[in-house]
Image (cartoon, rainbow, N blue to C red; front, side):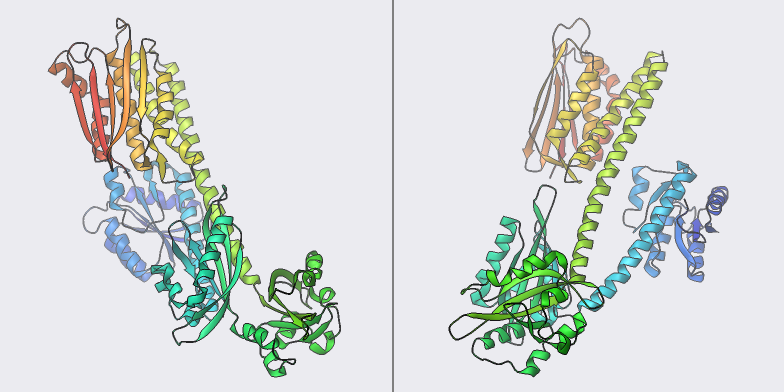
Length: 597
């Protein structure tokens, strides 16, 4: 399926035939390709053609500027998705593009379907990022001029992921200052209220439930402000809190009104109507006594039309009727303000989510006569919160699906190799296919662990190696040998586990092939893993087989592909390989040392 038609793509390739073939494929799927055969020419075409939306860039472009240099120059001057298109996938080639902001890497031998699929994904990601950036600019413009503050915290790394620009209006701190130091806002908290703030944070993290509280701050102008804060924990599938979503609003004016009502019997009409929040007075039968201008604006009803009417039947959403009716029963002699959130329906039938603060109106004897109900519209904030949660969940599901599909693909490859192995009678070829399948299996187990893991970057080395050893040892028909395994656990990055798994596979394969002839009555293979230093780990594989009869015998075995592969992979993880060549039946011992976190 085509992502979009009439998309102009610049194809940069110094091989004319390859460039022509790529352009024909793109035209076949409705794209408009433009061909370029050098980095310098590509830059000129980008500068002169504003219709180009994506660059498909070869890495090696012959003489002159290479693809990486051209891509960097283009990205410095124009925001375009760059997808690298190369005939090579070796480590050296991939390292060249590490520092380039790219949207993908496609092998030229992948075929047209993979090419088009990857380009579609790159375009979709580019347009999504572009739309998100536009929305972020709009969102920042809106949030910069509101009184409320909204923020998201990373509770694991103790950092603020996002906070609205409006924080500077109230606290006097810029968002950047709080990104650098999350606790900086505590400098503004009123000394007597520090304990309230700290206790509510602890309650939210420990009980994993939302909290609402009020506290005072002293801003940079020396003014004391009252804030109403709400903290919402964001939990993973195991109910562990990893993010906090917070809302804070300046309720200084509302607080002042609440305190003033305890001393005065009347409210000045001007003050009431100038309040920037919804505010209404009701009696104990929920009949409306006062209705400010913000009520008129939000609900659409004029004060003259609602005085004496039941506020519940007028605006409260049906699902919240019973909860609202019970509010007077929740206010006792010690309650100053009761807070709750519910949906209301305005005159046009629109649903609005409001956060309400209800304070009792008392007579001289303390008897409750009615309620002062004030509220703010938090509909958009709630929608933003739900959108953020949805995006986080979708990201986790996508990562798991990717790991699952990669594992399944590897399983398919392994099955194909097995079927081919069954068709072959030549023993050396069968052995080569068996060894290839074991190497694939060592990588497949990593993806299986990634699919089961909550952390997509690090995996338990012990858990991975134990699973790998179970698979490997069951595939070795060694009735005359036993395996002794002793592994100290460490957490290891996946880019280290791949080589370690293949190295262990090769060492055990060598033991099976060379160490234990049929004449040996009882063989033993010791596999031990231990942390030598805080960041240095060692795996030893030792057998009591026949060993090497001579130095030349040892050299001949070292020259096999498997042991060459061990040497290469050990260097890849910047490790150290130590081999002991024994005499007679004293066996062999190999040590692999490498860095861990």
